[in-house]
Image (cartoon, rainbow, N blue to C red; front, side):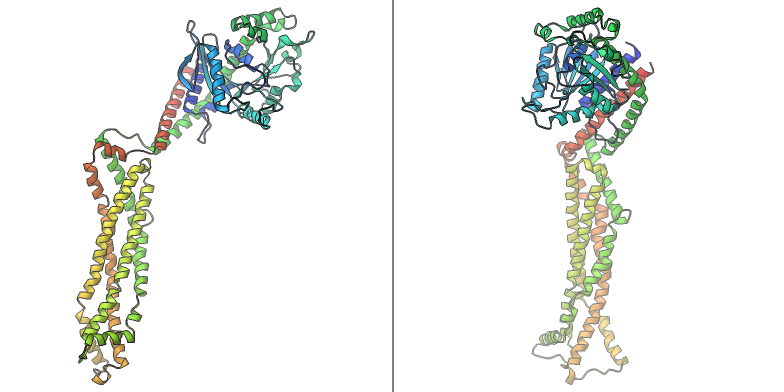
Length: 612
């Protein structure tokens, strides 16, 4: 096998591998490897002889036949030349382990697979059928047979069938790496050829087009196609090739392809019109010239193909790095993986709190804005209204009025006022709890390594939120205890200073006469309000300390401690369940691994052949 033959075999193998992996569509920004590799597309009108040309190249009768539209799905036909003596067979991509040695069964499977997609109607489908044929009698080549071009819809076909077929054919022939095999019957005016019209539109220079004239033996007596075959009537960059396919009578008599090829050679060799062109006519010559041209195209495209492969390898390796390595099956390794993922989450969570990432500043906003605002809105004006002060003091005195100062009234008024601080204290705890839960959610979302494991994400979120709930309860107990402590023991020095300040101000102790006057109750309200203000200033500073100590500090130090204890008690099956990846992500990694192997193998094969 020559170097170039080896290169074609390599390209054939790469194309087949691309097909198996579905790498002929493309979900990346780069062109797919399939699209970069050259292939031969057979184009022609209905009943132009496309199927017969393909069968002549293969040397086997294997395609469905009939009137009207027979080819209703693209057929990607890969020919693989084998050593002499090896029995030839066909293999479908959708039946990868089944070898067809009876080519009549190949025909039946093509028909059945077409019907499975389109039904037994005359509809078409763009989904291709992939068939590989291994034979010592073929050249290494990839051919794509497409539905025949038509001008009108027949009964059973949608009105859009003409445009649908045209669009399908164009989607193949417009690709710059496509070699167009334009089939035209010789008994039809070349100017009306659907295949030549389309090829001229997509390949105006004719660089990619090979013209094939069929049915030369069916032309009217006294006429010939010399003007076309010699390139004078319709010049192309590449020489025209004439072929003579089996007649319907030959098909009915089951004349095999070997005999058909012999009859074709005899036709050209003995023809007075085409005898001088006999060496460059026939299906065998067509297959040879296509293979030679494919060699030159591959050689010209090789640098671009290699560049695409290298870019694709870089892209796939980057994606695999992002997706992460496969999960280990060993329980110890799984536990280590889980702990590493937990540490990655914990690190991001702490960065949010410490300022490396946004979010922690909102906790300070609770202490600097929300808490002071809540303290200012407490209803002390209502609680210390003259009417309420008089009521509270009178109730505290009972049947015997106070003699000097209404101490019990003071205590009741202060105790009632301090009870209002419980609301802002609890609200601060809840606000910080909500922010910490939000930071847990964001941290899990930002931990890239965790994206692979939705079950572990949910478990970490549940464990973290459970811990935050415990911290909240402890914080609430502490802050409310601080409020209760202010009620349980009043600051005596504050009240001892009041008589001294009154004396310095020259205000004598009020007489018993004005003990129940309005001014007396105003002084009581003013004193209580001053004391409550002092306590408010104190709590404004101590509530944040308690909240940070009980919630934020604990979240930083021991958010997942209980979860770690649970992990240590888990069995292998439970650990494996935590590392149960998203099926779509697992599928994506497997596809990436397979494609990476394909592209690396393709690079190595091309390098070994091109440098041979």
